[in-house]
Length: 329
Image (cartoon, rainbow, N blue to C red; front, side):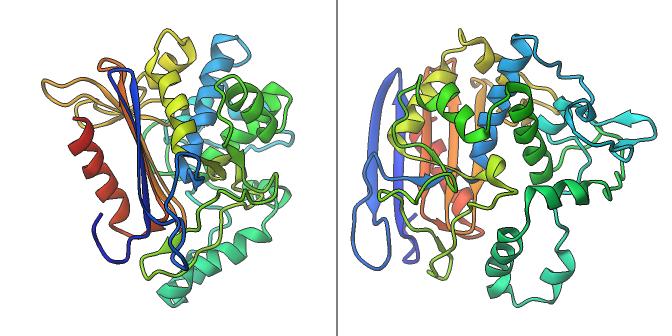
């Protein structure tokens, strides 16, 4: 992480139950402000693990079954959300096997013609005016190309649907659910859902690989999948909850549901990996227009780590993963 285009780095560690926090660089390029344990970063896709934990909790409370057809929880009829009679289930949404398109709306044609330097701004412009209502309208036109459950692939659309369905199951808006189910009981005082409130003063600014300030991900359609912002101090509380597998919902969310665990299986959004002669590791990455994050922990070792960087390019996440391996394992 020594490249001159890097901005800030915050690391939270739980090692044998003890917590440590380290901060480097700056919360913004314009002036030097060292990050703190309370500096907020976008979680991006790490937000998806909150929906998965809610799903596990709903399963244990017999509100839902993982095998439920997702159309049971949608307000309109979607005969298209199946492939040759096999429907998409809640499990398919959580383990990346839904066969849904990664993004809605499909903007491939726009991006292929665009200047690469403009893609982030185009993406922001598209999603700032893309409502939840339009999302569900476009969902009627989706055509699955394979059987749900057959292939795992990254899917923001599935994460959006899972978050929306959790709102239906619990009868609460996602921001309220985050407060009631996570931030209040776990004393995560800094964690917010972007778009629900004014931008917190302690929020870092995010940048791309060329050092340009990037927009925040507070889009209405993607809010439940990518818009939680948190700090190292708060995420250590979240990791501590997941390290304690006496918490049945945490344990259930870690159980592999697809793939080979020796190479990296998928649990409920979490990735579960068991290296040869090593403990099982539970992990997730997050990358937005201007932020990168990585969470990995091992209940067996009672240890875990969260790494935040307020810059995002093709190399950042891999660098965070390598750094976590060096520090924790």
